[in-house]
Each structure stands twice: as structure tokens, then as C-alpha cells.
Length: 90
Image (cartoon, rainbow, N blue to C red; front, side, top):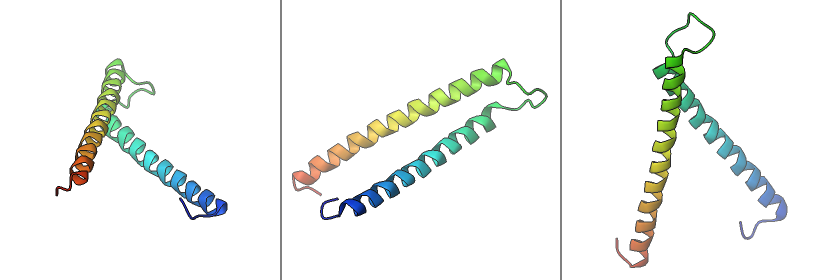
């Protein structure tokens, strides 16, 4: 953000924040849709059944663990690629 005025930096920061929120909402929406579709199938009651509650809990936990591992793996691969580029390799 070097070379930008304070006003331009603020505008850029606002745009980045809005984009991040939009991405988060999209990811969250996909999680809700996926777990709901996989776990909720009894519409005879307003409340979730014990089986549905357990399924949703496992689904969200598995999703979070998977995304955490993907983030770790991405960081590992990114670090390895940066190291490779610093050594002049391709």
C-alpha cells in the first residue's frame, strides 16, 4: 500500500474487508447447505432430532478439521515453493 494516500488506503482496506466478508459468507453458506442436506431429513418436527444434532456436530467438526488441514498444507506448499524460488530453481 506504499504510494497511496491515506484516503486511498482506507478505500482499499474497506474493499478488502468487504471482499473477505463476502468470501466468508459464501464459505459459511456452503457449509450450512452441505451439512443441512447431509443431516436433516425429518421435517415432522420444528426441533432437530438427536441423530440430526449429532450428525450436524460431526459434519461441522469434520469440515473445520479438513479446512484447517488444507490451510496447513497450503502453507507448507507455499513455503516450499518460496524456498525453491529463492534457490533459483524452477
